[in-house]
Length: 337
Ligand code: CA
Image (tube, rainbow, N blue to C red; front, side, top):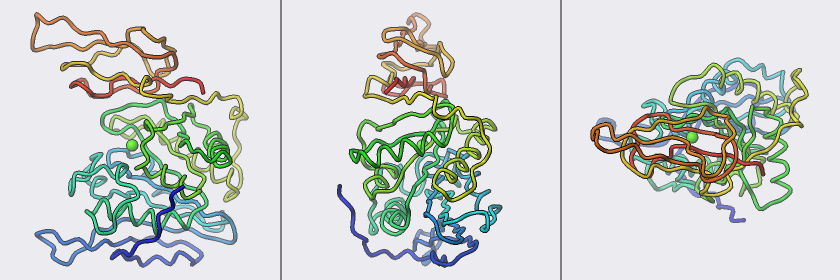
């Protein structure tokens, strides 16, 4: 357990985190590019607070090409009646704001993947400054953290609630219960091969009940994913005691939890070409079974290369663009825990 101490920052905000009611504003990060010597990068933030209850932090736009979370968080910021909750929501719909406005996974300002910069650096580039502010000044305010991702430009997922693994067994149990409460079509443990530089890993280290999502993807806005996200967020707020429980079917407890066990969950492209996949998302698959092939369309004498699953499970995600290069992630298999 390494808890990062609060580091000095040049960022500032007009939000009063202790005030009840609704506030919508920005965290301002001094930013001095060629055309704006004394300007700021504005990261949007809203607080909706009423009475006594837990503080729930919701993040969207961690990656800028994943749109459902930011849409749903914006709806809550505008439309949620403070009187309908007991507690406080800290709503950050577009944390890597330059990536969000560019609709890119990574920031066009410094080229960084926000979700590989935690715990950040308050004296680093803009992306590192934002992750440092979230680590030092936002997450310590929270009891729970929801990081709403979708598949982005390169992947398409079964809409899923994601469990961040943690060695803290009591927290792991609470994370699992919260992810189950989200009630997405799938609930999946995603360890990111042990990477600790993510927002959710950081929130777990700080002891917050932490869940994520992966909601369809392909860089589009999916109405199915939006429905899952709108309902899921309210389900979790009810689970945490912030809102009244919505009426919903009692399907939650029956759902099996899946996981991306290790690197065998992923099928990477071995060669350069165009990817044909064989199975729809949700298909049960077996280790050794062909999952697709890569066509070298510009070399007709070159036969296609078959790629195969490396473990038994359910086809959880697929690459969206056809064009693949060696090392690209093509298929992802989730297996029962
Ligand atoms: Ca993502």
